Length: 355
Image 1 (cartoon, rainbow, N blue to C red):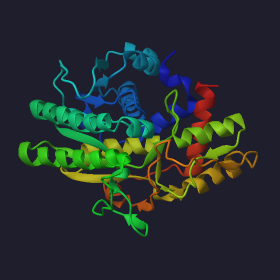
Image 2: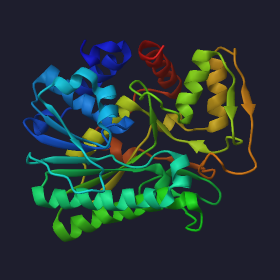
Image 3: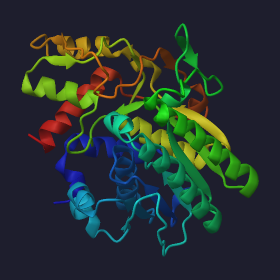
């Protein structure tokens, strides 16, 4: 069975995404290298390009960089039989050979598990720095048309009294003496590395600062907060929070986020950063948990607090910020899926594919 057809909700998202993306002709007959292609963002972009080929005949060659071949086989299944997808098995920090002339690079590879950021902070930092340098050097060699670095809203740090309407020019504080700061600090450095390559080598870089992104298409074993909440609904079990849940979350549904990434890749200004967020989804973790219990589970489950004395789970410090998406919207992008609908579509996808 074609992997696109296994989930009705995922197929709906892909149809919307490729139908809405207006710059398909600019990507025709090009080769796109995607790193982190077994992570949620990398997988979602890869699926979008392959589906665009199938529906619109764009003939985009996707070269997917993966570390674990078995994981890639599990995720992509029969899509690996398609002639427009090829895999390179390598760590992003290592030198790897690319037989194709690369036209576009989308660099998604990164450590994303908070627990690893605590247990392996050195590896987290060097995965970011060495990996990004490898990809930028490859961009120089191939004289790419566009290089998209996928960054994170965590690079903004924290603001003393909280902050509303965070545009790409504002910046908060990150404590360099906290081990968990390795992730946001490395994102900041990699962004500057991209700007340096743009300045010195004229690499046409763009930067996407992603909010928390989820929806149909999440991967097996996903354990971030949104997946935990969704599975609590499916299993009819209470949501357990290990913090007070005061952090303010900024979210974006996956198909909206991928559309934003594609818009930035093709239409973004070189040397510029763009927030990818749906401002209407802004909420605290505790309020989101309550929303899931009350609206998605219809009050059949509750929020329970179980807070350890130490940060054994590696959670980031509480953040209070609300991201602004005006700059990305100026490219013609706009989000369509709200937070409640995001959860409903996520739960439907999990039931279609995992249950």
